[in-house]
Image 1 (tube, helix red, strand yellow):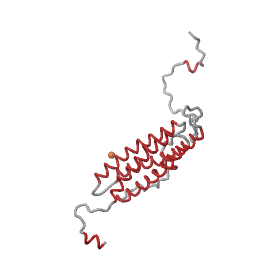
Image 2 (cartoon, protein in one colour):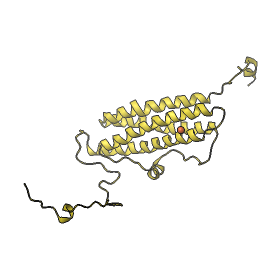
Image 3 (cartoon, helix red, strand yellow):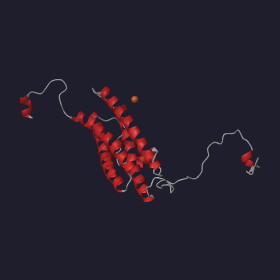
Length: 206
Ligand SMILES: [Fe+2]
């Protein structure tokens, strides 16, 4: 049996919880770890994690915009939209997790806290108050557009750099889900009558 060589402070048992510890960071934000077995060079992983973090901040903002809309929507279509917005929220939750874990997998650090997300996102900040349904749709569609555009360019760049995993994430998960959600939203903005069809004569008068 080997002798204990640790200091006395490590050998004395103490049942007191060690609360409120603070210590320096073990990895600064914006860096990637050196030793990875991914066959992706550090500059590639740096560029991909930076781009993914931008997309992540936007996806987190869109996710929260969906919850705001889920809670605050009002009007005759309340129930339908209340459910739709929460469905899209839950799908965005999954996307956020996939992007964040891709950043970590590449050796980077995923942006996580609301303060940092607010400083990073390109999505316009909505008011705290309640807005009309068409405005909710407009905000959500604008946010989707930002994410769709970025996921396409990021998919192409990832392929150029040999990062097929990020390309797949962009196309299979981020792009397709956001395209589908955008379609579901935009169909609500077609101005069709709810009960009575508009006669041909009055359509021509318009
Ligand atoms: Fe709810």
